[in-house]
Image 1 (cartoon, one colour):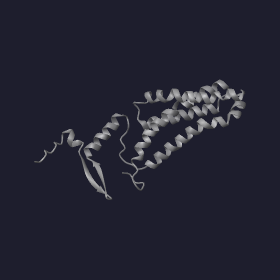
Image 2 (image 1 turned 180 degrees about the horizontal axis):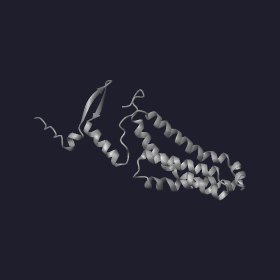
Image 3 (image 1 turned 45 degrees about the vertical axis):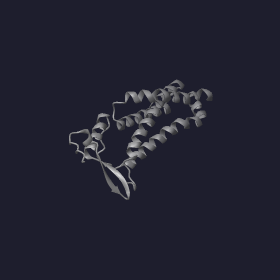
Image 4 (image 1 turned 30 degrees about the horizontal axis):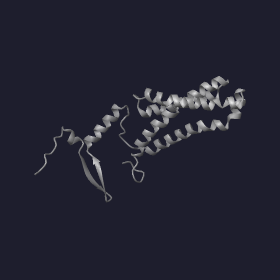
Length: 185
């Protein structure tokens, strides 16, 4: 008894996978029609399709540098509290509120910016988040008063959580583009 072959227009035909041998491991390669469906789904979600995989390592490096910059900014201010207190002419415990204000910005900004940016391309949203982070930190560095510093630190903390959440999704997507010896799959 033989099974009927699915028709090209049926969903079973589009999701069919065929085995291919690759170095004594069995791997499944998606049918080209499935790949097109995945690209269409990515476009519908706001992500531009990745048609070539020319620089996935550079993209992952950029994400790592962005994560390092955000993490460093969050924690380095604790070591600089005496300098910050002197710069805005307040006590060291009062300058510590700048750290708490940044943390409050992270808590408020992570869900808010993720919801507001849900319809944007993830890559474009990451760029906007880093731009907002940079502007907030420049405003913090140039703050003329204590209250301006608190507002700037809150603004600098807003993109923090959203960057890490969205960056993790994008990083995972790019990491699957890198195959065994640094080649794209």
